[in-house]
Length: 369
Image 1 (cartoon, one colour):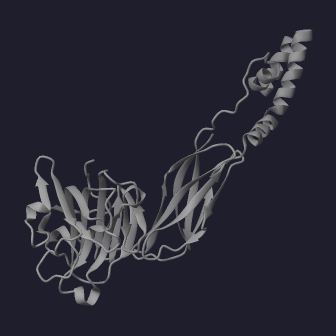
Image 2: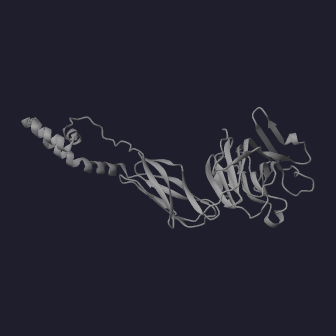
């Protein structure tokens, strides 16, 4: 997987990433940090019994790239492609750290992304919220945007927005990636691989509070008599914290949909609701089709009777022209047609989120099978 152009906004200027490496002070850098110029891969790792990164520090073991210089205004976005080991647990792979002058008042960090071995290798926010799963041994793209104008941090994984929050209000920050042990049952060894690091800056964008909707997955196939589910994410922007009412529409042929919960409040970060689509039983679909075709089939039978018994071609022509060939074929067919219902063409379910006079939608393609 390779990285591509930055996500979100305009007016960006690409900058060359620069950083200092931090690793356990009592071992050689090369024993915890390597760079392969042939592949462009940075490999960082620590062991749970390693020393901190400098003598006298009380922090847990780390091998990290500390990006320089600090930033104090505007907007900055980090993008890279990362990989973790699905068997390893409890370490930070990315963080936004508060500058040294601010740390006493505001705390050490304002955002951290944790790696856990659960769910096939997953990443989580500080709060414990799982942002993505089944990432172990797979390269994934990470974008983190920090807008100091709106005080907003936004996170994408593989081009999907997975998290948004307000920062801690400090005025001095820097970003870090790599490995930093955390106290949640860490494994003996912790590794991270990083490549294709890119960074951009801008003056920062401001705007009115708003929200957006997205669906994951955005397509469902639902068997007769069964239900399918997908996640609807409500993402706030510019400090939005209103109550969004969700509703769905667009299905036909006896199918139904619902969204739960019907009202969500994305205060400080994205929230999710569940869209459920239920398909009618095959028998019910069949009865609906039978009823819809019955008048035409009955009429066609009368037409066929005239055809067989009296050969009244003008009458046949007028009736066929008036009521269509489908009914004629249904009524006169001599035998063979099979019986099963075809798969319906995909239809679109629209989920609408409403807040006051503001509304946004997202679409889910549904095939009833």
